[in-house]
Image 1 (spheres, rainbow, N blue to C red):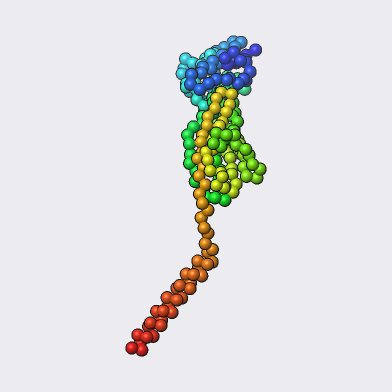
Image 2: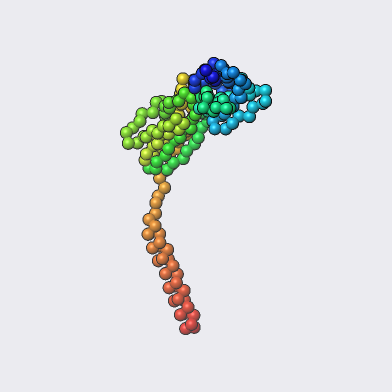
Length: 222
């Protein structure tokens, strides 16, 4: 009958919480005929406990809870038999955090990618707007890419009509964030053929050399 429980749970469980306030976890050894030493682990790392916080009951406090604690496993184990354990996975819920603006200058006929980086739990969804109007995704010109933390809009072969402010709006059940991209499409720069430039340099060099040689012969005659 010996068993462990964490916050009154005798089996592994997930605990939902919010960033900020401290969170207490209490491990209790039950139905034991002797004093039982308890161990705590954060992931694979052992948590250091004070001497008065190890026998039969042990408490740890996570303060403050942060977004980086999301998905972290805390495990209470029996010292003399580490197979006796209870784990709790933290489910730290927070809204997407995304603010600011960015200006992008791109040459006409080139490709450009607008990137929003935003963490959230639960996972958020993104929507794109141009000049405060829902962006119509033209086939073969716009491409969307999305993971749990990255939201991208790619525009192929940028035209002058693509000038404007693009807004990435990231929403979850807990809130939303947004970021503006001011896209400026510049005139296409003229491209000079490399072969023509090399040929022109060669001709100019040869002409100068011939001029020097001709002048040299004239000086010698004098």
